[in-house]
Structure formats: C-alpha cells, structure tokens
Image (cartoon, rainbow, N blue to C red; front, side, top):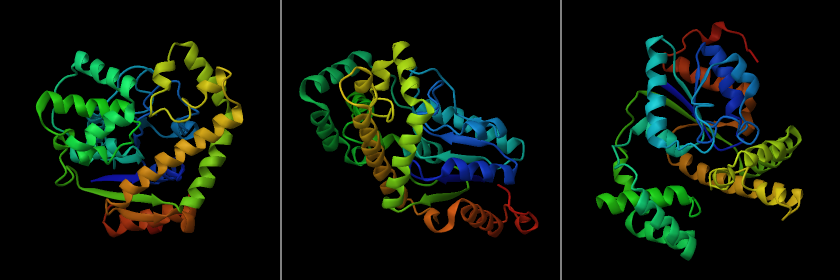
Amino acid sequence: MILVVAGPTASGKSELCCLLAKRLNTEIISADSMAVYRGMDIGTAKPVQCMKEIKHHLVDEVDPGVVFDARMFEERALRAVEDLLRRKKIPLVCGGSYLYLQVLLYGIEDTPPPDWKLRERLYLIARRRGNLWLYQKLLVVDPLYAGKISPNDLRRVVRALEVFLQTGRPFSSFHRWSSPRFQCLCFYLKRSRSVLAERIAQRAQLMIQQGLVEEVRRLMQMGLENFLTSQQAIGYKELIPYLKGEITLSDAVNNIIRNTLQYAKRQMRWFSKQGWIEVDMDALGTEGALSFILEKLKEAGIYPDVSAHGSQG
C-alpha cells in the first residue's frame, strides 16, 4: 500500500505531508519535476525545515541543466517505494507533477532513445513557426497527451512528436492507464480558485523576500539561462528579463503569479478527473486535513491506532 497526497501548487501539500510523515513514522517521496534540481530551493518552495526532520526522496537529485525525465523519475521513485516497503514503512508520495504521478502509478513502456538530429529539427521548426504551430501538430497525432500539457511546454511537445515520428505510435500509448500498479490510497488537496490565487500571490512575494532574485542570478552566472527559460521553470524564467533590465521587478512578480495560476488550473483539471479522495483544505485547514486523512487510513486498516495519538504539529 502506498499513500499519495497531491494537489495544485500552493495548496499546502508540503506542510501537511510533513505532519503526516511524522505521524506515520515514514519518509516522503517527492513528485515535483523541479524539486529534483539542486540549488533551486526558493523558487521550487522546497520544505527546507521539514527536510531536516524527514527524509525526502527525489529532491536534490541532479544539478540544474542535467536531463531528468519521467523514465528517470519512475526508476528512482520505484526504488524508493520498494525500499520503504521493505522497511515496513508506508511510502508517502507528495507532489503536484501529474505526469510524474501518472508514471509512478501506471507505469510507462520503454520509449525509443532520443534522436538528437530529429529533436533539433523539431526545435528549429518551433523557432521558425512558433510553439503553437508544433503543438497543433501534436493535437492531430496525439490529442490525449496534448490535452494534458501546455502548448508552451515545448520540451514535452517535442519529445512526444519525436516518439511519434520514430515509432508511428502516439506518445500517450506508451502510458499504461488501466489500473495502478500498487494498492494505493490517493488524496487530492482541493482549494477554491480564489483562495489558491491569494496563496500563490502571497507565496510569490515571500519568495522575493527570501532571496529568489539572488538565486536566479546565481543560476544565470552558472550558465543556466536556457534551462531556466524552459516552460517548467516557473518562478525562474520570469525573473530573467528583470535581471537583464528589460522589465520591472513588479512586472516579473506579476508574471510569476499569472503563470503559476495557469499551471495550477491545469493541475486542478487533471486531479479533479482522477476520482481520488478530496480533502477540502479551505474548510479543514492543515490540522483538520491531517485528522481527515488519518481517519481514512484508520478505515482502511492502515493506521488503526489513530485515536490513541494526540494531535501533533
């Protein structure tokens, strides 16, 4: 049995999972596609204090700029799950990268190795005709996968088209959708759009106060500008024009908020279709959500002594 606690960015996953991991005496497996990178701490909202107390798998795995894809995540996450199960601990998966969650729960068939010449041609087409033109081609050959990603997520658009051109099969056909490979209990942390928008705006301002500008400047000095401008790097790519003197800091922060909201909406659409147990974070708050999840675990026979423990926090 594995436990999944997921939801959109800024929904309160990290705090809740930290409390839950303490109560269950377990470790956290992160399903966050940007938290895998070392040195990208503020912009990815890594739970630094919790990481000192609870072991986090799939965080700080590789240096920025190094390719880390869904297949690599699957392999390492499965090793973490197996290790925890072997030690009689409940694997607690925490995150919002729905493609990573899909891969972990449902698996993915072996896809062909990268064809770098083909990939470069696709990127060249995107530069000449625009991301949207390439995305529209993906909509024709693989509408299922195209519907799960942003038209501006060029890296994933190119990879999906690359696989299709190599194999003649839609990229989505490599995903196994029938049933989860594990027995799992999955929770979706739900927030109203208005509350989530407020939390995202507050978090963006807090990140600036914590030194996000300096973090981005340091990464740029390491020669990582191209990596930071990828569609995934929300919170980083928006500050590069500011550091180049092209826009104001206020404009950059507004762009972070806007792009984060757009990503959160895509996350919410995906999670709302999964049929997972919904946790109303607006109504329950963190402590109430903790009690709610522990009660569900008790009902499932996973945590039968929940009533014997006092609230921690």
